[in-house]
Amino acid sequence: MEAKEIEPTPTTATWNRETVPEVMKIVSTKVPQRDLISLLLVSPWLYRTLTSYPPLWMVLDFREMNKAGDRLIAATSLPRYQHVKQINLEFAQDIEDKHLENLTDLCFVSLQKLESLNLNGCQKISDKGIEAITSTCSKLKVFSIYWNVRVTDIGIKHVVENCKHIVDLNLSGCKNISDKALQIIAENHQDLESLNLTRCVKLTDGGLQHILSKCSSLQSLNLYALSSFTDKAYKKISSLPHLNFLDLCGAQNLSDEGLSCIARCKNIVSLNLSWCVRVTDVGVVAIAEGCTSLEFLSLFGIVGVTDRCLEILSRFCSNTVTTLDVNGCVGIKRRSHDELLQLFPRLRCFKVHS
View (cartoon, rainbow, N blue to C red):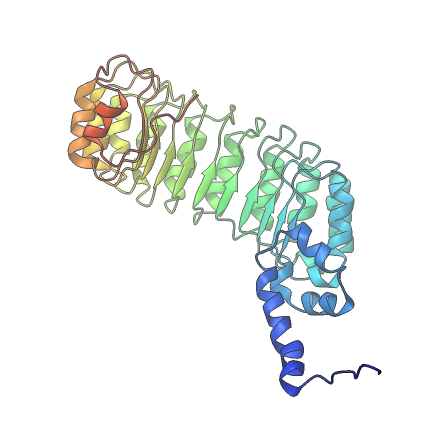
């Protein structure tokens, strides 16, 4: 006896036509990009379903991939990536100026809505490549080019002049930028919210002061491993009312006087003072009294602080501090985990630096 083919009921047909595609769209938003690409190969029906849903194709992630330049051009040539908002090329291989120039020529439309570009560790990119890519990304808000020694003030000028909406700028490790770059940034991006200048060793007080006097919206400022600044600049940090993250690790010229001015930034939540060797109890007490929302504090390697500063810090921040590093602070005698927990009961992390 032949088996009869079961006709789909109206309910089943509706389920297949409407419910399943919607479920796939929702599930696919949680899937990594590489797996999402694999799903396109499952069936023509799934391919049509997924490619017709723009929110799935807002991000291009080539982090640590080989042949990233060619992959980027190929991807942005596809219709589904015409609304891409984020491109991540962090530590990607085989990405050069020529790829960014070709991208501008071949895929101009796909870059019109780009808001975030990560070129961290792409050391073959120079000012020339930055000029090309930023000339077509007028809506860029986040730009990161960590650890690039080829970029100079000229490249930063292209970013600033071509992308008027930058709020997050990471120049960490760009050792060839100078005060001139900071002046250009300050004059054009006064709404800047986050700035990372880690190891930008050519900078001086003058350049930093340009930023501090113009960019009053800054919420995050990273000055890690910059020993050339002095209190002349550090005191100006007090003019940042919205600052909540400040990294001053290695600020060898920061004194208690400069730190006391910084304490006027009432909204600081995270403060790294590791290896700020001139700081004493006086400066830390000022921070305790001024920054009462403090959650993260590193005093690592500061020999001039004692138990007294922790006692006063506990009076003002005992209910907020969750990370406190006092390793290497030989003047602090009561620094076992149990003793620190008596002062800061919410403490969960005791070591920031290894």
